[in-house]
Image (cartoon, rainbow, N blue to C red):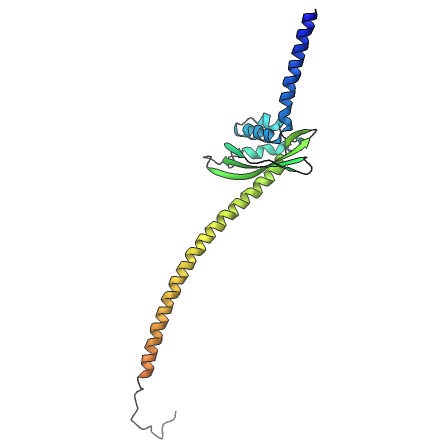
Length: 193
């Protein structure tokens, strides 16, 4: 009986240790973000749901649309906010139909009952901001390239226009140097001008 109690004690200790180890992940926001995005990219939405805040579960469906369709992800460096009750992790989702679209986002986590959870609503807001920022940067780059090309074309056009003006000015100066023809016929006194 003593041996059985000892074995039961060892099993209980083992279960508690393993349970404690498993619970440690919920205290690491980086691990939660990794589990969350892994679940989303593998279509394990039940696991993703278990890692989100209760009030943002309904937003999970927006992460698995045909346009977004994250197929893989990269997590950046964790940034703790608001007295360590909120965390932010820069994330790049590789999505789109072919997985070739890089979507910058910030994964937002909040502490709920001493465990980290993904705030999907805030993360989607950050996704929209990140996407708009990427679009603006892309347009800015295209505009800069376009302006550079436009600047070069305008310089060529202005140079050509300058050459034409110089030629016209030279011709006008030559024409002015030639004395006007003298009208040798006297004007009739009876003519009305």
